[in-house]
Image (cartoon, rainbow, N blue to C red; front, side, top):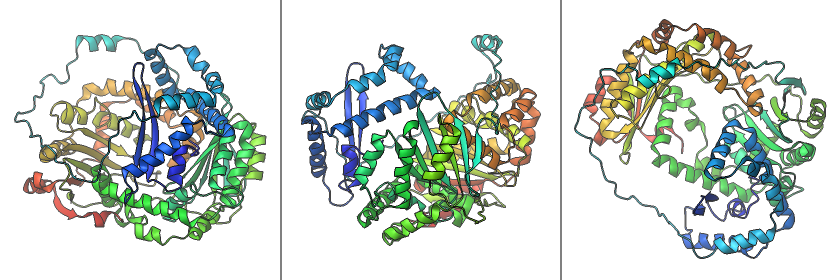
Length: 619
């Protein structure tokens, strides 16, 4: 996780395109799996295997730096503690514990067991398993023949008693529900806020379940502001500082039990850091050195170009990626992120100074800092003021930048022909209205009824009754704030020869939504139960509050949701559908094999516009 491993170095030094090691340990038999990708041009499997074996030999011979080894153990302990604080991963650990005939004492004693491991243990295990006794699968570029499965020649069986309930279900519904008091987030008390300067706000959440902190620094400047941020986020993980080279920088962080990552989103440049609270100050000193004193390394720019070429090559062969590109083009046209990103040829022209100058500018931007941990807020405030290079800026930023979505006046179909596609990837897009806070609650009820989950209309009509899709869903998505309109999106992934039939069924559900009023109690129960199952953990709490405020809420949405759900009636779902979806132009996007689709029948659903990949994405 610190990118200091033996395989990580092969990747960071540009000796290989990519490599990953993975444990697959079972009760009876297991494996250690090494997945690698050679450089696209000129690197053989034989060459890569030599590089891998040279690193494994270091383990077999015990050639491991002791300080480095102790740092690895510290990070394993930290990751174990982080797993235990998460409800979902804790439940998974309990399940594993049962399957592996362990008890909770094994989980509690994990840290001590890790501490007791020595280099000789690693050498012994490496000698036993990392030898010439392995199985290798190698894949080369090519186009294997694929068998085409014909569509079965029978009609769907649609039960007459679709709304009937079994005896089991009737008894199940009679069981009393435990009334759980909802956990309401208090925006002011659950996450304390402090102004670090005119531009920077600190969100503080007390997390004392362990001694681990999580710190997210969100500079309010992202890809909508400068499309080089993707490359900057990559580059920052490939360089060291003028005081410390990359390898030693990562090792210094690892010694503290700290890790960091860098992410560029449409509106933010985010540096995420975690580690032990007692080491926060030393960790921030290292991060400060990186972002204020980075060491230029022109050679590492080759990694950015190589990664882009691999990404482009993969995108062109992945129907899901092509489908997303086409949908974003339909929604945003020239403002689509796929058209605003840098091409491989543009990345080639980037110099190290271009990225580092952007970094220097970024750390002057307004930012929000999200901390969760057990440090006293005054001590934290003092560390951040001293060790974070935040500068006051009078700049009045338009944050967040929100793209306007395109509206359509008639039913339209955008078609991207992909001759190699076995499946058709189909999206349905409808422009909606601005929605009040109350309407958003009713919108959640509509989503539950129409297209979310296995009891929805879409799942039942398209998958359960007709087996027309591998994947199918539909949801209404609210605007980014109260001034922006929402939109409806549905999706079907189906075999090419079922395309017309699948579109026909989805179209009928959207234009003439079936009204099954007897489902209202189930919808109510599901929505009310979801109020407590969707509580953010303390690591996510302050970011959730910030997002709620940006969306237009002044208090926890669950307060309004619960009030509406408890008195919900089916007419409200119909009203929401009538206002935001019914009788509106439907735009359909299709990525599929044109030869397997009857284009004449397709034209019945709207005007067809054929596009190519150059129109929807910059490569």
